[in-house]
Length: 112
Image (cartoon, rainbow, N blue to C red):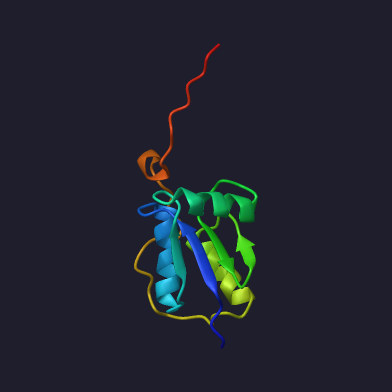
């Protein structure tokens, strides 16, 4: 099986992002981890490529998976033939969300 080129737009501590990383570790897939919280240029790049602001986003050989969980990523990798089923356990939940502080959410102030 050939190794795909993978760019993952992830947050440092988000549950969704940790689930995506766990899938990459499970299948020993090399990837470039682009921190969208600490590097604003990566967040902008992700939004431009995916057409939306939600993460994680994973680009595999030029195909963008927007707002994807580890579980969804694994199913997609199977369907595309990038990985074969494995009994190897994952090291983190693959479908766990983030709390507000992990999202890096900015409070919105409404003026009426």
